[in-house]
Length: 249
Image (cartoon, rainbow, N blue to C red; front, side, top):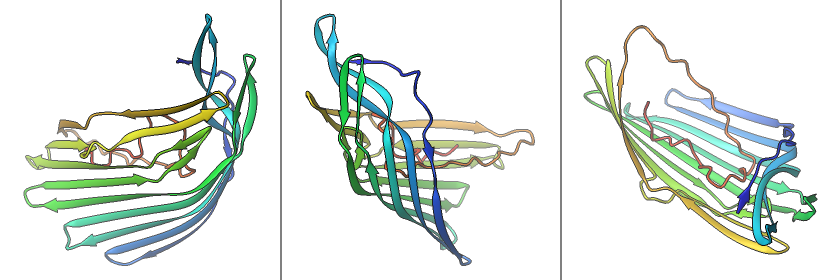
C-alpha cells in the first residue's frame, strides 16, 4: 500500500441552516435543534489499484470528491439529580447523501458511487460529585453505520471512565482515566472499486493513564469551545468517535 498527499486539495464549503429551541428549569435543560447542511468539494480518502515497479499495489490519498447533504435533528438534555449527579444526554439523527464521482489520477480511473443512509449517534456523560473532593465521570458513545466514499464505516460504541481526587485545598489533583473499558472502539471500514474490495479494521488496546496536577499562582483556565462534525463523519481510518470524555484535566 502506498499513501501520498495531495497539495491541490481545496477547502470544503458548507452552508449551514439551523432552527433551535431551548427550555430551562432549575435542575433541567432541554435543547432541540434541526439543521440542513449542503457541502461542496467534500474531502474524503480514496483508494485505487495501480502498478509500481511492475507490481500491483493499492494507492491511497485524499481528494475533493463531490457534494454532500445532511439534514437532521439533535436533542440535548441536561439533568442535575440529587445535587451530586450531572447527566448530559445527546442524541443526533440525520439523513446523509454523498454524490458519486469519477476522476483520473496518473492515468488511473478512480470512481465512487453515490450513496446515502439514515444514521444516528448518541452520547451520555455522567458526573458524580462525592465527599472528600472525589469525582467520578463516565462517558458512553455510539455511532451507527455511516456512508464514506467508496463504501461505509461500521457502527461503533465505547465507554470511558475517569476518577479525580483533589488534595490540599485543591492545590493538587490526582486523575485516573480508563479509555475504552470494553475494548470496543474499533475503526472498521469497507471500501470497494472496479478492481478491488477492502476491509480494514484498526484498534488500540484500552489505555489507563494517571495524571498529577499542581495548581499554583492565579491562573484561570479559559473554557474551550468544540464544534462537532455532524455530517455523517469523515473517512479517517483512525479517527475516534469522541474526545475521550472520561478524561479529567
